[in-house]
Length: 394
Image (cartoon, rainbow, N blue to C red; front, side, top):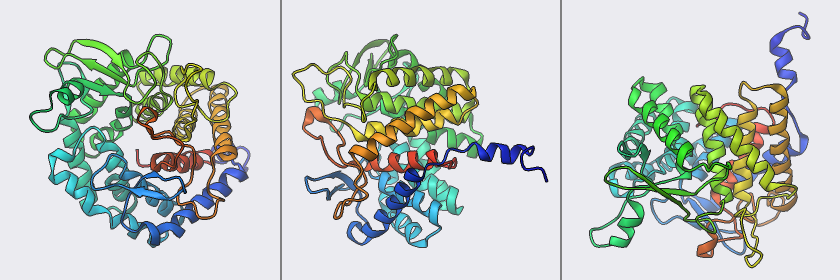
């Protein structure tokens, strides 16, 4: 056989490999294995000053990221220890499906990385059923009058301020959750799943992405008529600023949408957002938490934004785009990963429970410079993509 002429081996030879990335990925898996007795069935929420985890108290939007890391580790190793630890968390996800008060737009973060992952890796029918139920709950949040999935729900009957904030609001993070709907469409052929994801993505492109390709974190609509009102922030510095993790959510999300649909509109938005992020990040090693900070603000970096961006860029580079463009996105992703390795990597730090330092969860609320479970998950995903893995749960 002529290996050079064979298209399979030609493609295989083009896979980017980096010994430092592979070595780090191996350390990530080992860190997860070492920490299983300490973490147990708990789900990390945020790190403390000593690089130890503070855990979720019941249902939380971040609860799927530990499970997602365990499934990635199982995918890489085949070790039943990782599979058992991930499956043991199922009751907490079942509770979300039983109680509508626990559900919001983050169902994708929660169930793509737990139930869908389990179904794809083990073929467990109950896991598939849970994924479909979660997709149904996410579908129910669609607001046809505005063409968007509402992010949050007002709780209780007397908090008018919270109700006014939540009703009629979409956010950048939801782009990551659309993958659950695209998966449900592939599983069932029910068009509603795909249609709602497509409509929401189009609304996000027109309302969350500004003309200069920066982004709003949130956008508000008239809850009754669906009339677009204004862009605002929740975790960024200001309504007119560009929160770096919001830009990253959108980059990864639109690349996911294109991978799921081959809709050229999604590819166009992913390219524009990525090019803008490339310019905004500039020569820095890790993105600052908001790209429009005045000199009076502390420029905390956000390792989670860097990890999400890198994973999305590798995904974009793997799509059917010109080779020169793919090299551009891969080079940017490599630079972000190398920045995380030089500045934020905890996988060599004895006693640390997580993988990355210097995450910025919610700077206006005082949650910054810490470990974050979503930063860790996307760090593993980005490392896997960087060395050629292409099968994920999104």
